[in-house]
Length: 291
Image (tube, rainbow, N blue to C red; front, side, top):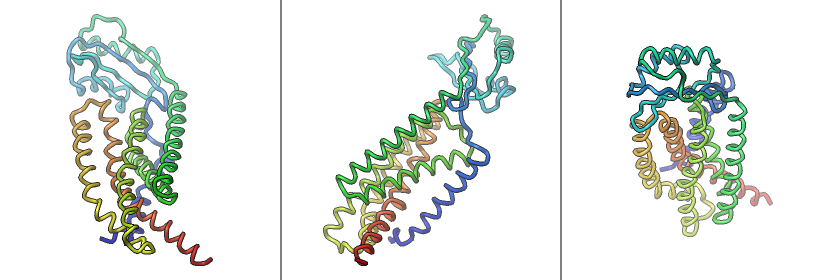
């Protein structure tokens, strides 16, 4: 198994996905949710369980991309979240359609709220600060436990995972919302775990192998840990996929980026982090050789 030697292939695969995703994101924009764009939230009590498909027969007339969630123990309340800024006349029209169809006794929805994009900007800023602080903390910790170049390689893998998930969301036009931000922060913690396992084995193998042959050390370390990494990811994915398939829409929007992040994190710990470490070590050796 010579994964490091073929690093140009692995880098190219990731690079193509990231470039396509970012270009599409810049040209047509991301499919941002209500938390980022502003919009309208409505909750209506139907007094009976109604399938989401039946609810969408009405809501799709106004916004086919609206998020529909059933609330309460008996799931008789539905919540509609849309990026459209509905005025009072449109909100009344939507409610009246449900009132006429399901013979509702109320004269107005349970809850109506309108959101401005300033909320989304605050979420973005805090998420960015959290990611930067996390990256710096990880770099310091890995440098202390291993060495600085291990830390740089690990941060490169984390940046790779973030960009891959963003690219997937851009390509597939998946809505970006608050659960997405929470999932991205979760991905950072999960992704670094696999990378640390590989790096720990590299550090152990450096004691017994020829230290100048960093490529061989990395390949042997990956071979010794790859089964563990795959098994861990598969068991994690089984749980997350089950949540996505069986969960309600609010759970699904959190589980989807986790699925993409786990897959990307497993890939980066094997095909990105270790090859980047080898490149940094080889560059360091060349510097010392020229002195």
